[in-house]
Length: 330
Image (tube, rainbow, N blue to C red; front, side):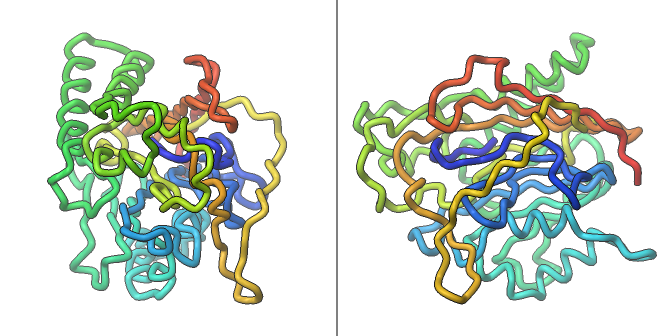
């Protein structure tokens, strides 16, 4: 569930352009990399990225886009005989690449297999957490390290997902009803009201409480140099292990065009993919909500709901929905 400055340009979930048509997910158009915060592939790869709440803008943005990390897993070719997830994680831990971006946690792996949680705070394989190794797990991840259990939204999210699943099973409901229940979890709003003039920066200490962030910062008209509250992609606040013991894929409506990247500020000659920080002010909130379901037979359902357009105007419920379905080919 990305929370962002709402005027930051993003592409909705869709199959990516050549040569990566096997990847399904949204894209960040504010950086040249056009990285994603969440994606799946037709071979069953899944990636979910969250950032850390850093203390400074520079630490939050980094020299490279966090989305490049996600893209590198989703687009990576698998060599015959290798353990793709473990091999990738080992390379990530040993590589300096992850040190050049803002703080992040990356959940990566294949559907219906154990998933790794990789952090750029990780310096050895024994610091990697593996989840989804057994059924019935619910694990929350937000904008802090995975084992930080002090955030109310993480604890609330895990509890609410468990309750939603229990009620879904008890009522004998179908897939659409399950998605609606999980969207209900993502709509849980525990944020205090600080007044019309409050900015996203003012709300920063309270973000750890609320799964859903309503529209805030509408009075912030001029703070183009304000500290970056969400300086890079900021996704799922609570994630069911794997993707909710279920299924996942995509079928959606796309106009077939590839959005042009937004101009990105770069340091002269050094190749750094720097973020244009003019987007980091003004209206802020939960911009999209995503549910991925994966069945044991490899069927994937990918559902995305867009809540605000690029001008921070509310999208009527349902009109920003995209739904995709596919069968994993691996």
